[in-house]
Amino acid sequence: MIPRLPAGFAIVIAASLMACQTPTQPQPPTFAAGVEAASRADLGAAIEIWTPLAETGDMRAQYRLARLYAEGEGVEKDPAEAARLYRLAGEQGHVEAQFELAEYYAEGVGVPQDFAAAADWYRRAGNQGHIKAQTRLGAHYEKGLGVEQSYAEASIWWRKAAAQGDVGAQTTLGALYQRGLGVPQDYVQAAAWWRQAAEQGDAKAQTNLGYLFSQGLGVAQDDAQAAAWWTEAANQGVPTAQSNLGVLYEKGLGVRQDYGEAVRWWELAAAQDQPDAQHNLAYMYANGRGVPKNDTEAIRYWRLAAGQGLAVAQYYLGNMYARGRGVPQSYIEAAKWYLLAAEQGYPDSQLALGKVYQGGGGGLAVDLVQAHKWYNLAAARFQPGKARSEAAGYRDALARGMSAWQLNEAQRLALEWQPHTQGP
Image (cartoon, rainbow, N blue to C red; front, side):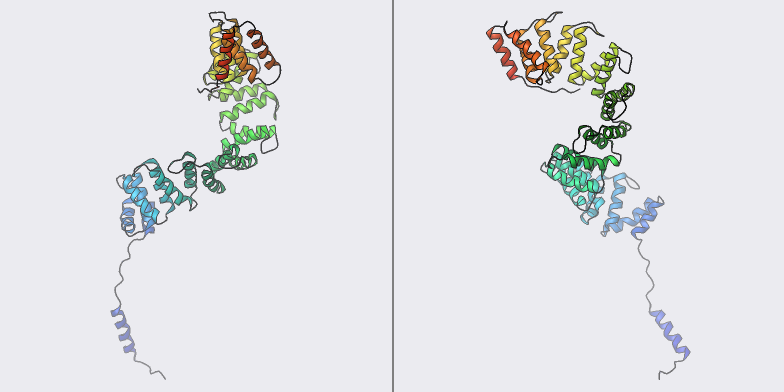
């Protein structure tokens, strides 16, 4: 039986226990307290709280302080200090700090520019599933920045980001499959990735997917689907989609034929310097389709497209000068534009150039060697048919009136000729 203690004894014991307790010490502010201070725009308090935490290794505090130094908020802007803190946090596995430090190395902010270091930190963040880091590392492999150039490696990292729904990575991965870069060429895969991006509203993917439907590559050929996807992209202002959509309306493919609607889309694309649209508009003005016939407008648009290096526009502009339509007739100007297109391998222009060199006139000297050369090249580049036969006929007829030296020289020039492209 436990004896009953006097009440006073119990009170003495309790008092003694209280006397032995250590006074409660105030707890240091927590990281969350710094977040709360920052949320009420008291950055001074947040910095005072986070600084000692960062010094003791709190990666969250290190990252938040780094952001403040990076932006110059609450402290003087100091990219080097931001980089130091990003590194401390990144080495502990803070994924956003790893990504930001990679960006600093890529851009040379706060640290010397170092693409290899950037790739290393992108890789660390990418391995933790950071989408932007994965896409950046893909781009580094594509361009060979700090790593050995490799489309295969690039495709691995873009695939990781694409699988997480990144629109840009999906569009890029589709392009790799379309071109067979780093992966086997596969239009079905290209269509699949572009469709995922297109359904998220990516205008480039919508444009590309429309092209696959128009050509039946990786999908069943379907002009209506091409029109639908090009309309989506065209409404976002993509000039290529606007130009392509205009072609469908002109030809009545997948949509009701409507020259006026074709012209409307081509005008939108031409205003953005899309050369195909400029050429198509010129053709409509020259022939009075969907717009009143107007050679001056035709010349204006053909000149714009020709100035960007579009061979077919250069050829038509040469025709206008040769015929004196919308401009004073000039075989010299015609030859100039024909030559630009012919040098790109455009056979119609090569044939036309042969004719003006053979006939001369208007200040243009006759040059049988050049005429034979261009007839010969045109005959080689035309597909079998009437045009090839015409070019060969002109060449053979001309050869009968040429000296042996002239013929040998013309053939030599034709053999040595190489096509080259032009830019705006």
